[in-house]
Length: 426
Image (tube, rainbow, N blue to C red; front, side):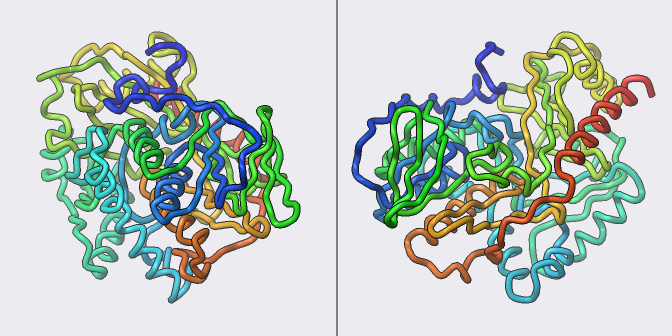
């Protein structure tokens, strides 16, 4: 992986990187300024432009530089929480609405992929939530009962059924969600950018927003290249939120999530997830694996990459995990290692925040960035176009700091590193 690449996906995406577009200062005000070139910002730009709004998106780095281009690539439905807890948290009006809209999140993503012919290795055969032990299986049974009550295509797998689908007998069972699937996440991100530009949205990369102020009914977005003026602003920065709006970065706990990718394994790994699903488990410190279109095996977990793909703690951890699950593979070589950030909220639910008049941000995706960012982009476009905020998938809330966010982030970082170390010696 080249030094400038943010992930393996950056190098293997069939969608080319969008051509850079510099900022030309002094232009007329636009209907909407979007800050952040990930799933949320690009989905907002696409759907707002399709509604006839003038749109200017600013990305400080390259398209997909943040969590979108470093994603695992699992297009999952709904939220981290099981349905009953979502309803309890959001109430009888917003709870069912949230479950319906975000339950259809994968369908929304795959429909966009089809409509815009986005080249992103899309496989829609579901994802598998695997039980790491008896307690995990009990949790999956409860989730299955809830999804069955809602009539969703989610199947509870026996241990033997799980073994056949995932390639190892280590799991006690699983939950197969047929709504879901896998993609090359950077390919999807770049495809959204291509579609947004085709719809009329302007996208400027390498332009960092440094100040936000509202004067005479317009938002002034300060940049080193000059100001951009807009009637409304959407911040689509999620876990990569900085100090642009004071206090916003404190509404979630940032945690790292790492991935390592082997070289293509060919027939050696053909028995691993042969139908193309992605898997994550029920362990307190989650572990995931999947294969890509070239036959690489990708493994990941919460935490940072410590070392490189060739040496250090994380690559030793990854080798041990692969050997534990798939001893028949023998020695493997890694092509890439990277990590990104996830925005975790205290209740594991996202937020839509109204920071000021005409200034909005959806935030706190809790590791469900692809579907959540896409769906929120549609909602933000509707909102900017004049929709009643009461029609959003969850209520608009105020900016409330997560308790001891900085301390919690340090604690998790230490715990995830300790987990890697323990798995290397256990």
